[in-house]
Length: 269
Image (cartoon, rainbow, N blue to C red):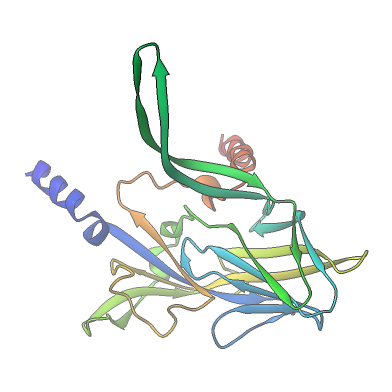
């Protein structure tokens, strides 16, 4: 019987064996504001910085809009994201690669064609972005993954009614946080050059609301969906979802995270 249950759970992994954590972010600090679409906006008369986190694992999209008549440079090497107390440089950028290869082979009396395919990832190092006058640049340097939302105490959740996309009404678990108790605090630090002098733009965000449910994104519909302050994380029971640092897995931070893990284990021992 146990084997049958396991097979059924594997076949329906994404529907019945997954928990989804739908999350909402709010602005922390005096810099910038959040617009009606949930985008976080800061800057000045010449440079506008827009943050959008919508999607799975909170893909942080940073849009730099140059409203001036001169060029603007974003120094990614001197820019970073601080997740709680972990600093991650924006410089690393992971890209996906896939394609097909084909080659003609000739060896003695033999000739033929060799064909195949490849896929994988590569890390590119992007030191700076050039933004011409009255133009914009979009950069997605970081995704949050492996955040242990399941560590939030069950006692904090409250049952609330939720209407699914098909109209069915169900109960979901929700919890809200203020800035002092939030389990996730983000601070973005950007160094931008307009001329010879650098300008520093800082903006902070924190988790304000968390919804825990088995409703998949395909069946989830809410007036907060598709907004810049809204993202979700999928957690599969019995899966290999990482619990790195108790916080995040970031595209360009593997080494820093391993060091922090060692520190945490040392404190526990």
